[in-house]
Length: 326
Image 1 (cartoon, rainbow, N blue to C red):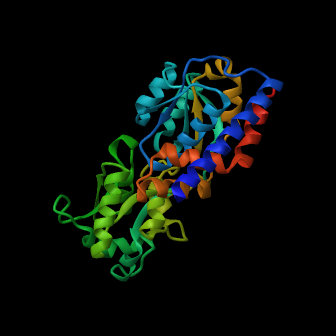
Image 2 (tube, one colour):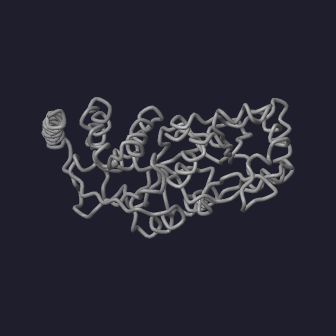
Image 3 (cartoon, rainbow, N blue to C red):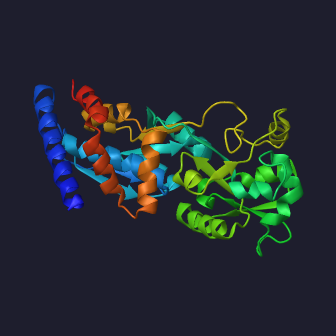
């Protein structure tokens, strides 16, 4: 009974939203400017699912034909360059900055501005590991307890569970620069990492991994982040090793760039959609609960996105109203 009440309420909100959008559109410009599909790239982590699905739902309510294409990052850049992908709405520059920057400078893709997320990444461990590795979260504690993270594949060194190889990780470079007895082993992605974390935490076994925030895994498994020393020794070592310090332990003091990217033809073919996507923002506090619902409640990303759009018209309608003005 509760589910039926929610469905009816959500449907009513959606109808009212559509009526309001139609009225606004009639007073400004006609959309869609083309009935061809706007193709959004959905990359392989849950937070990006949220960012993409929310934008797709709003674009559909504006009247656009929207398709979502599941892809990975390097082929996504090629697809956008060729016009097969219209936009990608959450792109972390610490992973593929050279590729993104080269394509932008060549005019093959365009930036739509920042996503709105405040991102960081580094090495993480469950909170209970601190009792087993005295000195954490300081990175130098790993010099004395790397062996507790050993696996059959990495023996006699400890394992750091890294990002998937496709994400262009650099954890091994950091390990080598800091002189730690660790080996970075690529993971199979967010799902497989979550499964390993769940197994390890149930037994309170040590596990060390490369991860990022915002991400539901950090709060769900009570992860703590390894910290650099106040004197900057680790950053000096990284610099001497030629590491790009925009990545992992960020030594530049600036936030990771997380940008919205688009095919250059978007602005001319769908100008109102272009303006909306420029204004569209996703924040840590909005994305986090939705990502957690998808992963821990077995909910579909599109359903979670629709529910949020139904309940938060006051947030997104100003973006649409502005986009529909010529």
